[in-house]
Image (cartoon, rainbow, N blue to C red; front, side, top):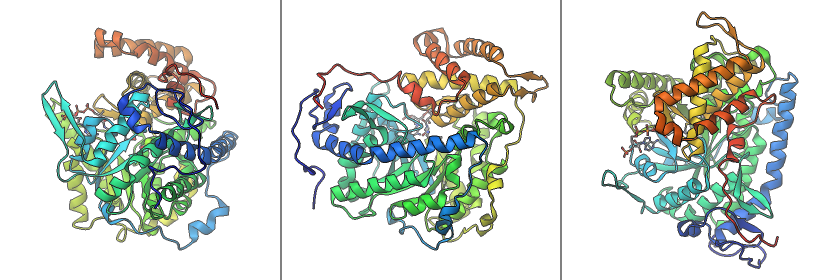
Length: 567
Ligand SMILES: CC(=O)SCCNC(=O)CCNC(=O)[C@H](O)C(C)(C)COP(=O)(O)OP(=O)(O)OC[C@H]1O[C@@H](n2cnc3c(N)ncnc32)[C@H](O)[C@@H]1OP(=O)(O)O
Ligand SMILES: O=CC(=O)O
Ligand SMILES: [Mg+2]
């Protein structure tokens, strides 16, 4: 058996270019720390470089295809099912059987790869914990590397945390949730690691380092011989799933483990991907454990895909829920697609979180979460997401009450009725009103989220809701869309067109409100002014930026001086 700790491929000559011991052609420009050096070993970096070199052209091509497709949508074309792959949609194939370790996924908690949160999440009573390098994490070098250290310790069962302020030590319980890891999307570079002079592909760094250090212990201690397990975000087409499948094949081969050991759940969270669900499962059929309904990015993607369609303006963000026809259709078709192929259909995240010090508001939030989960379990989902440990008992109760002792509904909720869902259903225009309050809330939330992200926090509580990169994206693109097309705000009795002048005034007033709310001291020390500049620019550019985090990433890259490598 070839172990990952051994050298593979052609022999290389070492060039010591940084304090990290790197293989040929690799340069690490992130801060040196001895803990990080135990992750960024020469063999681990060689594995990441192998993946990057093998797949960089595939990734480039896939991203170019995204741009080509967007050009067509900008010209008026609508996303649709691909006639060429009809044979896949109509074929009788199945995904590989679900590994026993993850047949029951009734409630999954998610959270950034922060040390204390990892322990809390694993101990939370949820069936699964999705450790997030994506929507919930600001991808600073330190967050990413500490995240890798934390996950290695979690998989080894040695993770602990001492909260000095409370003098409390956190350790793992005997029973813990199954660990899934969500790497970044294909579009994000990792600028602190250069491979042959170019930034490494962010998700291959996340995947590669985690897989390299953990595959053996994970399979032994957690996966019952399978694993590691992943969540894959923000894909737009099955060709992107094909790349992941090949990455998994490559990793399994290098590690000398059976094909199909690695398993992944794909988030269907872009509008183009809803027309590719069968195709995505088909590409990953030997590595799949289902699809997840990533509702927040999906709403963001609806706006982005239709950025050239003034007839498809969104109402206020709070009105775009799962009961809108296009959301309901997507959600039901996802269940049918997964169950037809023998895998889990996973529900999404309700935005409510527990409200401290206000029992009435807390009960109201819990009730909204229960309602959302009830809708999901009755629709046929096999499990759902929770953003906070305090929500798990309520979510679990709804799923257990409605599913009984069955671990999932794969065989019992076929949803054949959803076979009739059409392209028109999936694209139906959202209904609702646009209001000045909606514009103000988007502005306030977008700026505060970005201020947190720039200072290293990727998920925050704002106005008693969870905000992360996906929800903040909705705020950004909605303002952009309303400004671009001079949308009329008329839902609160005031008829006013959104213009640059109006938005400028709103930004000023909402900044003053943020300062009042957070206090002068926090406001001065935080990055609210930078965030407001970046956010306002992104909302007013003539051509919509693809991702909020792509532009903002440049503000958190910190290169450390090194002797440049001989490439
Ligand atoms: C659209 C999507 O992609 S959704 C998936 C990505 N988003 C996420 O994963 C969000 C995850 N959730 C969170 O980050 C947090 O719950 C927030 C930011 C929403 C709220 O955070 P806070 O207000 O700080 O939480 P709060 O103060 O109530 O936390 C109480 C305790 O619960 C813990 N906790 C809160 N959320 C989580 C979580 N998701 N996982 C593990 N522990 C958690 C805290 O660590 C804290 O522990 P302690 O009492 O031992 O100190
Ligand atoms: O990642 C989940 C989403 O809703 O976006
Ligand atoms: Mg998402």
